[in-house]
Image 1: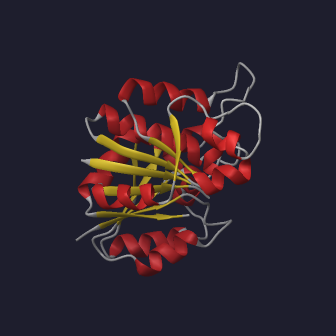
Image 2: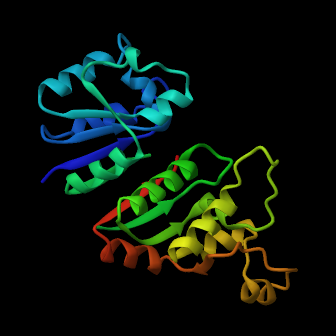
Image 3: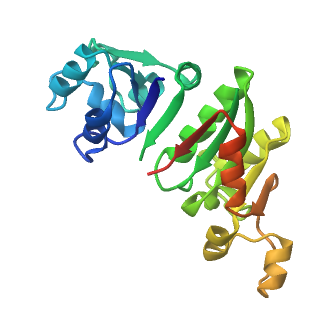
Length: 103
Length: 130
């Protein structure tokens, strides 16, 4: 059983991403949407935690529309994070057995 | 696959209503079924026909109504949340002695049971909000 976690708040504003990572299983996927896309940027205070979780097998995604809406270039995104569009978002919800929305 | 979508925030709170709308469209385009959309808490503000945003702003209430018409969506507004925020259909406004009903086309007022049933009947329940 795999879980898709969605996080919609910046890791520099709320602790929902950290809470999510603390319960993430190795085969889980984490999708960063809305303000959470800033957590996908390189060299931030949350980057190490994302890398560490990725090393244990957690897959990371970010919604490309929300990055673009915030003027953030794809090149600034961590290598561990895969960009998806809304169609990709839908696909992730179907590929995983359940969805947990962190609000 | 069957989806039920729960929306907890209004069109002018943050981004969640827009995300829910875009997700719903993408799911329909991919051939999935949207079993129900449940508007809860401030999310009921998506369902007022009295909202008149500037012409260069997206009109989310209208977009939902159009999408519901195109795809025969079941869009439910929570009755208790709606009463608090002044979203009424004909029955509710008559019952409470208010003026003209203001629920937007395609939206229906009902209870929390519809959310639970949506969760039971669907393969995935997604929650959008703050």
